[in-house]
Image (cartoon, rainbow over the protein chains, first blue to last red):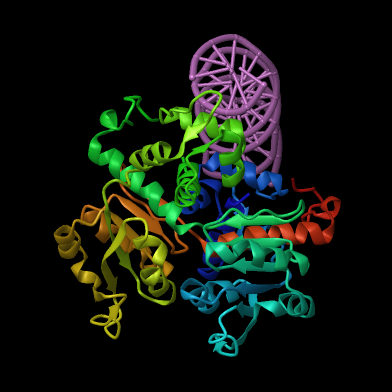
Length: 214
Length: 214
DNA sequence: CACTGTGAAAGCATTCACAGCA
DNA sequence: TGCTGTGAATGCTTTCACAGTG
């Protein structure tokens, strides 16, 4: 459930503000979801809300953290230190939540040897060796599409079983390996679809054959 | 449907390779989805596959482009030229598909006036004026969470009705405005969940109350 | 009395399986 | 024969509505 992570962010904010107790209505509104859905989600993780009162914020926060596996820290390897990769390496949001950037890789000899956010960039050939040494559990692929599958294979070979893919390519992996994809071009295209739909007028949004979409 | 954008990418690649015709099986495999699902998706946009042969690649490509509204180009305004925003401004994947970066904004006086990828960074106060002038239809929010809602309101006020939000915050917008969210920390946490699940052993993944999750 | 936890209902998305056409 | 388009079946997610509790 992707929503648990959102709940956790809201809960952490509330905790920082000193809020001790929260109702499902309030928490759901802050997380942008339906209240019933939130209660069902929390019931799945064995929630401990008090009827007539609400949920204990510190306790619920810890519960969600435990379920999400954030009680341990995760070593992340980032491959591809180009435009996007460079930004990700320096992105504060990762370290903030226990995701340490344990290693950076690239093919470009000009980049190998440089240091980004205190971490040295290494050659991609060293992925197996370094990932094993540093106990990497999560790999981030921020390479061009053409290199993505190759890099992915290297990571999987090094024992990495969770991969976040920013490359516009479909990665094939053996069973047991989890891949999540973030495709910025796809997100833009979905928005473009809605722009057109509005601009054309809903009833007029049609394709060449005259059939209406949606 | 987010998958249409993925199909389009695969189709464009095939077109470049000179492939004229493709079956639903092959296209589905390349896009990483079920063949029946792909056929149903294409039937919704009034597809024109030939039974016994497959789909005509050039024709299908154009059909998908039309539905996604990629026949016109879209002016994008990017707000927040920090770590991530800077990378997005220079990201080739946008321009490549007809998404021109029409304007950049930031609050930081040190950044205002600088030029990134050929576009000058302007003060956020000028969002209404500039967005109207340049016909911006899509806004990208890459600010810290605290500023996100404020920036979002400014964009909506300027007539922008499609927003891509990278800030870890829930944006509230009036009806008719479409918001898509990309939360990198959330993606990482979902992967962390799977790491823990594997490490603990599925049967042992439990919360404090002893109830098993999933 | 306010709020949680949860059956039951409704709504979607996915998959199956096959009729029908080139 | 090979492949599309699609009704029917399945499974999952969301929502409703309310019984039950501190």
